[in-house]
Every structure is written in structure tokens, then in C-alpha cells.
Amino acid sequence: QVQLVESGGGLVQAGGSLRLSCAASGRTFRSYTMGWFRQAPAKEREFVAAITWSGGNTYYAGSVKGRFTISRDNAKNTVYLQMNSLKPEDTAGYYCAASSRDAGLLVGRLFVRDWYDYWGQGTQVTVSS
Image (tube, rainbow, N blue to C red; front, side):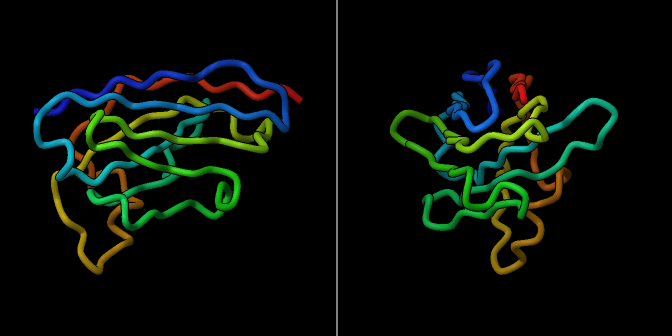
């Protein structure tokens, strides 16, 4: 079992930055692929970013690529999402997720909610214009 707790959300003006953190319990954290998803009101939960267990590979949604950076510190059982140049359309609840499976070459699996086994409760990010 893995428990995930997000933090770092808040209210920020457009163009500003926030760093989200996701603290994970469990000794096997270092073996999990980690992802961030977001969900705006009345919208589906969508993929934002993912990072493989070693941190060697990262993946981003087109809408955030070049502005957001996902990273992890396996010694601290924590994954981060650095968000720069925030836009009002980034406003959403942000959710951390963990997958115990290895997608291998099928990278597209990382973009799908069902690939992930564990989810945090989310942290709200609001970007004002």
C-alpha cells in the first residue's frame, strides 16, 4: 500500500510559480512510476506529467511542456511538480498518482488514469488573471 499526500497548492497570479509536493509512504516508493493529473470543475481528470522510477524519463502534456517540471527525490519519498508561467487555464485540483507497473516501451500508458494504482486527495491551484 502507498499513501500519497499533496501540498503546495494555492492562489497565484498569472505568470507566477508554484511548486507542488507529493509525499509518499511505503518502502517501495522508489520502484513506482509517479504522475500528476489535474481536474478542473466540470472537466475530466487529465494527465499533466509523469516520471519513471529512476527519474531518468519524464513525460508532459503538451499544454504544460516547457512550463512545468516533474522531479523526484527517492531518499525523501517525494515527487515534485514545479509550475512556472502559470496561466488561468491551469486552475484545477492537482492529484499525485503512483503506479507499481512498468510501462516499458508503451509510454502512452502513463497518460491514462487507469494505469495508476494509488491517488492522493489533491491540492487546489488557482491562477488569477
